[in-house]
Length: 176
Image (tube, rainbow, N blue to C red):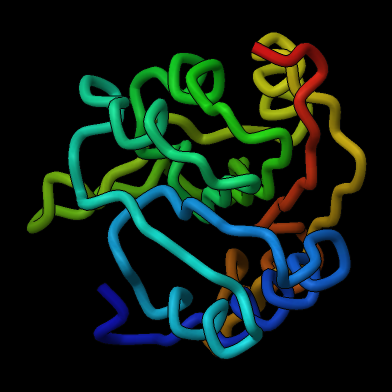
């Protein structure tokens, strides 16, 4: 997945945000397979369990059966056809989720070699906020950051000024 570049900046921002809002004594269910960020969370002192790569649009049992107090979803919701259903099925009271933001100057991401590595949704921040609100989550904190590249061109220059990632900490409004 990270053959050409490793997301150091994104992981640094994500870890800092997670530590700011979630104490390490909480158990975390991280949506998605174990990935390079999983050991970072564990090194920070979190107890983390990942889903096993099942299609969360269709199979939500891992989410529904989890007794984790926090769910994390880092760059997952843009891959789902129905993130609303997944958000509704979460039993935990706390959610930390990040998404890549839609960039007006760049097309939606689609890997030509990996069917799972495609974005069905390209969210703007307000759209993601609305999705969370409709699924009974209240956003407590949010941050955005850019992701500049060292390439030359108009789009690389725009990436220095246009936020690329959006992360939120939200709490369940109505207990299920």
